[in-house]
Image (cartoon, rainbow, N blue to C red; front, side, top):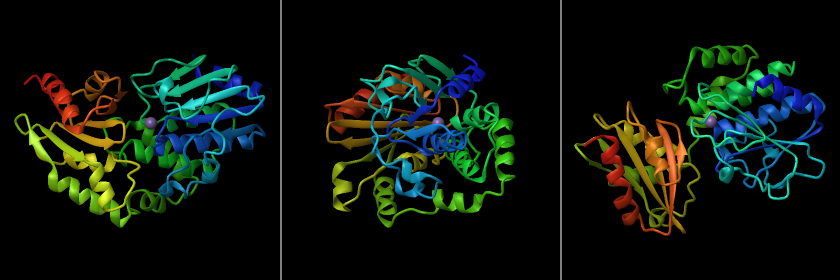
Length: 319
Ligand SMILES: [Mn+2]
């Protein structure tokens, strides 16, 4: 499927729903709002479908109030639902059981199930924002300052401020174009990276205090127990920053974060160089990228989850 054909479908439709993966991150939110604004500017009846509200720290994004969880399924007469940044049907942040019209899947994850009626998966794109940028260009719509603020947020968050290996010259070229609209990139950066709650830093302290190394010091294990969160009366929305500390350790190749949740254990994986953590996550019906992935094991304790996961890590590192 070429992006031109998706643009054509958009041109031919009036009522268009936009959604993304559950626990939406900066790329999902930024890409969705950028596309929303562009379609509104094109006089489309465009709206966001989401079962979750936008996380507080992304409330600076233009039109952020449209990610409200008010609309959890497509409204009547919706002709297109566009799913952004989501590798499989189960993770879609919308109830689609009663939806019969066209579903478009636009993504950059290597493990994408091609669940749409039309699929556009560009695994070279560092963020879905790169694809949305191109799509907006094909639709002949201007990249306004609002759109640029959203897309820049996506690029920044999915590349770890342009430092992960997924960053390409295209990423930088698009970022340059976005900066040309005179966005306030310093304040975007501050909103994302220097806007942590005191409790979040306290939690980080607890996790760092208890982390340990395994398998020749190549693996860093981190744990978040329900009790830790309860003790400081805190709800953790995004643990990606915490796990990144595991990779800062000299010699560590894989960082793994186990998080206790009421019905099981969530596991996040990060890899520094060659290890493919997507393969590891896939053992547990998870997915993601080769350097960042996640999985969920239902109905186990944290100890049991570790006992199942650690042997797979050993295999991946060929130890
Ligand atoms: Mn993404």
